[in-house]
Length: 84
Ligand SMILES: [Ca+2]
Image (cartoon, rainbow, N blue to C red):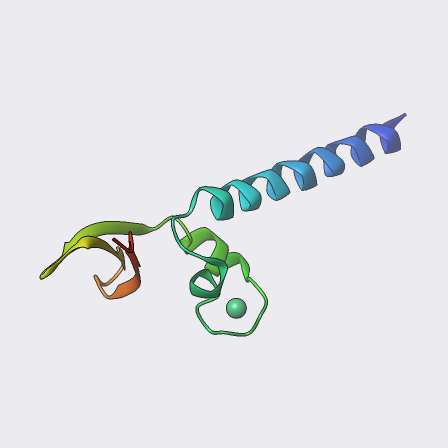
């Protein structure tokens, strides 16, 4: 019985961790290639946790564009233009 409870607890933790990672990626305004900051092709835990740590600001001279920047240092992460 104790083993069953331990297994169920570990499974619940794994599901919660997967849900957290998935929601971080899903709700991030950044594309996966930008979230993968080191370009390794694999998203690390720190990259996933940073995925939503971005702000948005207008781009001077480009009213149709929004620049996403990293909160940690204000450096630009990604620019999205509506293409009008
Ligand atoms: Ca990576």
